Amino acid sequence: MYTARFFSTPLGRAALVSILALAALNCIALTRQINNGQIDLVPHVYASAAAITGEPA
Image: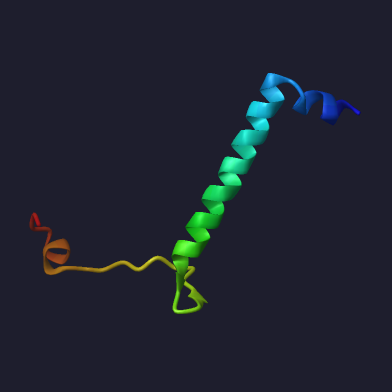
């Protein structure tokens, strides 16, 4: 099988580590969005008076 041979090479191992790192970062990002048992899919945008009038903060 070609896949097994690929993952036994240094490049294949590096690719596998990269895939696992991205999966771990996705898990971290999803768990940080959970708020009181509910997933917060839309980021919150907070407006300030300086942002509305264009003044520097």
